[in-house]
Image: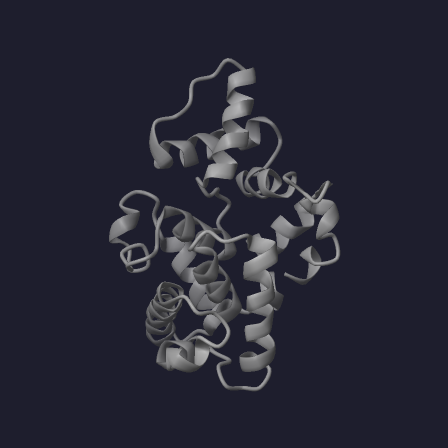
Amino acid sequence: MVHEHCDRCLKSERWHGSALLMVIDAAFDSIGLNYFQSVVPKVELFRRNYVETGRVSTLMDLAAADTKGLKSIWKNDRSWHVAREIAAHLVTTQSRNGIGDRDALILWAHNASLDGWERDPVGSISGVGINTYQYLRMMGGVDTVMPDKIVKKVIYEILDMAGMEHPDGDLEFIRMVERLAPEIDYRAIELCWMTWLVQSEAGLSRTEKYADLLPKI
């Protein structure tokens, strides 16, 4: 299941290939709430109330949207600032290249560098940290990893068992996982998702608990 989910992520097919929903997902996730219990249900609610009704169905719509109405779905101002600013940059990418929403996300992700990420048009947005930046790159088709606390905890435990030193800083952590993954016959993105999905909720691993949900997102 993790392998298939990561395949969809690398093909930019999460949320049925909607770049709009992938951006909303990343923006909601940026404030650190429980992903499956808080973020996913609200992204789905946004999809039903705004995308399906045509009220906000493209990145251009989101960039121009009034956040007062949107806050009926998600109250956090920072999340909407992040979402609208990312959308605005991707709309600019669309206009310059004559492409659609999803291709704009893919083009940005494959051109976005880890080095100097804070100077990237997306990375420089207030509220976009390294985790959100990496998460968007992953959904845009880049095989990489987020240096969030859960991923680090699990990877550090593996390094400790192998007698290996911990890397210094987030960027070195990302580079280390990208180097390590093929040596143990995994992709970096798989190591990232596996660390989240093996965590337990209500006595079940998230892979078990959300088995019906994962193929939909």
